[in-house]
Amino acid sequence: MTIPTQQQFAAARVLVVGDAMLDRYWYGAVDRISPEAPVPVVRVTREEERIGGAANVASNVVSLGAQASLLTVVGDDEASHRLEALVAQTGIAPHFGRDPQLKTTVKLRVIGRQQQLIRMDFENTPQSEVLASQSSAFAALLPQHEAVLFSDYGKGGLAHVSQMIGAARAAGKAVFIDPKGSDYSRYRGATAITPNRAELQQVIGHWDNEAELTRRAHQLRADLQLDALLLTRSEEGMTLFDARGEQHVGAQAREVFDVTGAGDTVIATIAACVAAGLSLRDAMPLANRAGGIVVGKFGTATVSYKELAAS
Image (cartoon, rainbow, N blue to C red; front, side, top):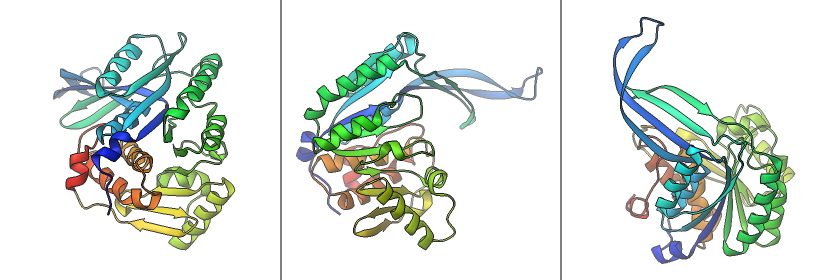
């Protein structure tokens, strides 16, 4: 297994486009049940904020030692300014389009007794004129990057993804997509998409055996004119379907603490490695290792170059 050198990663530039969000965690003690309803009472003792969504993807690129730019649309609210400040601290180059009518996506998780008790989401959909200005910003940023990564969380920030994929491919850039929804036609022409099992089943249906999965995955790849489809399979590892056939790697044997953001780590590692000069097939085992490391951490997390090299 070949890992890019730190110098190769330092020269690699990835443009991350998609739905950025702010992850908030409220931690507390649970000592009693509410007299008002059969729910636990959480006495909040600590609060934490982390960058999530596409911002976490970009953070994973940077943590490996590569360069990342983040193009996203947010509101003009307290959460957006907090998010931008956190993003800037990581070394990501932020390019935030602001929509005064938009509520910046916030996911608030309440944690008690080492487990998540409830998650509350605050969000709405951005205006079309702000998304149009995002396309012009994309065109300006594109020449400065070797790879483009679209992180789709279904929040409305990638309404023009088809045009952006076309522009990136015409410019000779590798394009990677973390997909969402049941219609993948808008991702046509990308280098690779990285669905998990549940996401792929929404598109190709349930498969009964490996042969059926292989046939349907290759058919989808051909229909969408993709170079590859990378299926992440949790405890079963991951499988790459490309013109050469299939390549499978088993899951890394380690304790799974939290799968939140593992898909972010996988696709960020793939994009950073390809931007650093590796082929998709060479990048895939490294992405699998990175995913195995991050599920041993709590919440949205990243993997460093040192951790990846040591693993």
